[in-house]
Length: 78
Image (cartoon, rainbow, N blue to C red; front, side, top):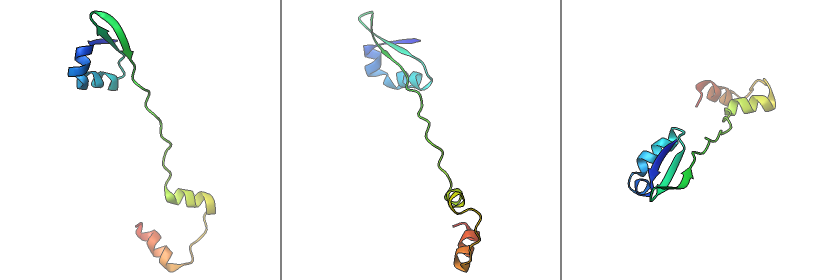
C-alpha cells in the first residue's frame, strides 16, 4: 500500500496513476491524516470477438459455396 498527499495527487498524478495501473492501493493523506483510499479497478474482460467465418460456420455448417465469385473472394481472403 502506497501513500500520497493531496498535493502529490494534484501535482504528480501520473506517478500515482502508474501505481494504480500496477494494482497498488493508494492512501491519500491530508495534513498528516488519512483522507481517502484509491483502489484500482479490476480490468474488464471483454468477450472474444469471433471471426466472421466462424460465425457463418456455426450457422450454416460446412456447406459448399456454388457461386464462383464467392469462391474466389473466399480464396483471396479479402
